[in-house]
Length: 164
Image (cartoon, rainbow, N blue to C red):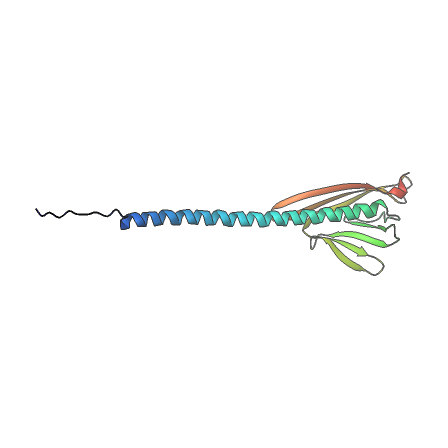
């Protein structure tokens, strides 16, 4: 025997490195999938929030103008509400199922403005005065949809000029 001593250096073998690399790649793939799902969920929630917020703003505008309105068209179908505002402007709120939008129409010049998109359904339910010549109150129901999520927003307003 010779007087030489063997020195062993502690190190990883190739098999150990390959196993560690495989485990690390599986963990990184799982993190990437979770991150992507988180981003998609955030975008969907943001779209839902924007749609519902837009619907609430439209509802606030409609109830404010209806509350102070006058000379309502009592022959309007459930998807339409026509009247004169406090400023004597002839307007119509109209829901069109063909494009799922709520419009504000100024009847003097025929201008149309989109108040709300992604509207799945909408109805105006007026209650007429006792003599049947005008509208006493209006109940409004609007359902907005984004993806497979639907939310219904409802409001009721009493026309101040016709409180008899």
